[in-house]
Image (tube, rainbow, N blue to C red):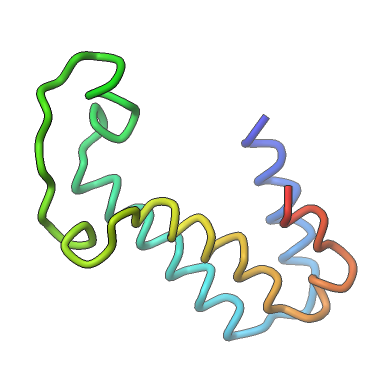
Length: 98
């Protein structure tokens, strides 16, 4: 479900006139999410502790040293950043909300 939704979002967002602030917030959210996943590693990113039985481990590297849930924050910034573009938001806000 997610890849087609993300592709649709990208297509209609990029068809709207570009907004620098909106793009910066989206990029920041994606980078935060990517950094958090890199710090956790593939196994822990995909529920390794809960599903695969990996031992508990406290992660203290950035971004976990500053934010408790950086992947959630990154996703909110990336999707919410699209709504900072007024042309996109006026026509496509339901797609970003999905």
